[in-house]
Length: 292
Image (tube, one colour):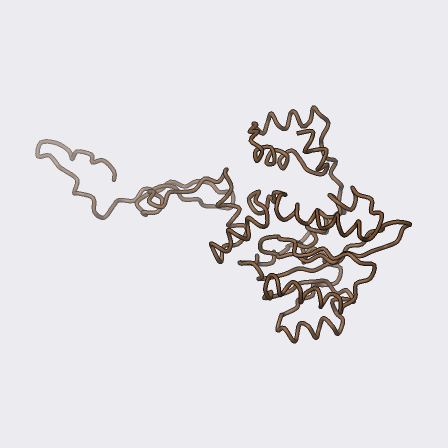
């Protein structure tokens, strides 16, 4: 556990437990948490800003790979405080990080060329989501979207939560790599970004995917086309209790029904139409029949 926590300082005890299970070490989550606390491995959570209250409608989940891509930029420095930028692209369905392009300057034409390269590898997306940055609103991007017949959706200014999938990925890049490493040169940054991207796609468990990796989720979604990541997480989670298909809950002859906002249980019993008639007696009251 100390070895894993030393390599992945921003991982909590749940992800560490998943990696331990992959290596054959199975431990109760309570014991794991106790040892995690005793060793002083707790991760200090970085507090975010307060958000305004209000009703928020979630964006519909992408049903299959290439249904929607999200783009965004990050920035960092190397050497003598020289800045460089990172173009990040992810698939919203399986959360796969498609690329992390680092350079000192990335124009709209460069973004279009990188998108052409991704289309040759993964295929053309059905939709692309980004903010209103100058690179994404340039003539090169507008021309690329028109030529490839790809709808390009721009989020509202100052609303990064509308592009939540790429923001979550950017937070992981910042928290697990950019804040932990020092880059000497641009090539050094590119090498470390490539290693982190492989780990993110092939090794790191994602709770939104049922603790699967994005590559495992992509393979599963290709087998069950049309299943959303939330459905995939519910069906693959070991703690999910599935209801039998031929149970009495499905026959409509009685059972439990969830009602109310609090999920209270209302019991109801129905008399089956095929039940035999209730027996009677000449010398006394009717004999109570068992319920069917």
